[in-house]
Image 1 (tube, rainbow, N blue to C red):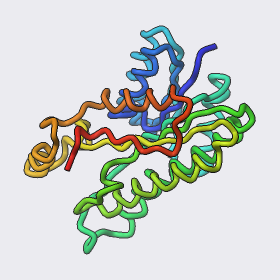
Image 2: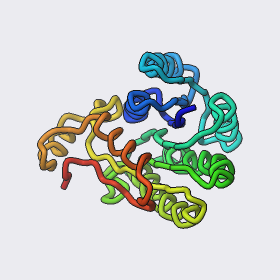
Image 3: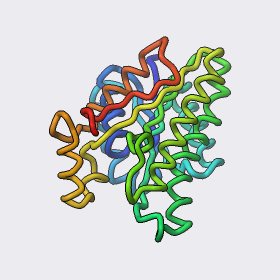
Length: 244
């Protein structure tokens, strides 16, 4: 039996790119999907593409913002694959708006999925990793969590919180052979960034040393590196083409 990775938010964007790269490397892939809609639109096609690479792949529907649902996701994926070696928390949403007009719902929804969702999956998967005295946890944060960003107080707060969560978990679980790291993408071409206003896109491109947006596959490469490293933990790996 090979290694198995569980990727939340694996039906699209960076999560989907991670799923396909791990499959290319011979890993079995469990894909977490937020809803039946994301399952049919993205999860199932991604899983099918992964299976074409000769590995096992399956989808599991769960809203990771729900503590009990996150637990059922971990249990179902563990039962299906016999264990989870690497957890990638890639599930994330945005509800952008100026802080002066941001609603409580906008703030709470983003924190619930992006930050609490990661805590929920980590909380449920750590018992099996602690028992094995092995495991890798990788959280997808953002450069916005380091720099802040206008109109994204909720998103930046959630991603900054992920950095603190990553470093704390790394210190708590390192003695059990478990590493916890984060990847902080910059401007990456995804469906989420496609909705950005053109002026905002141009400003980001002009601020990037490489003069282009990144690709989800380039973030996936950083995730896979951390998943296969043995002496890196508590680290935030920035993948932004030097933005700023």
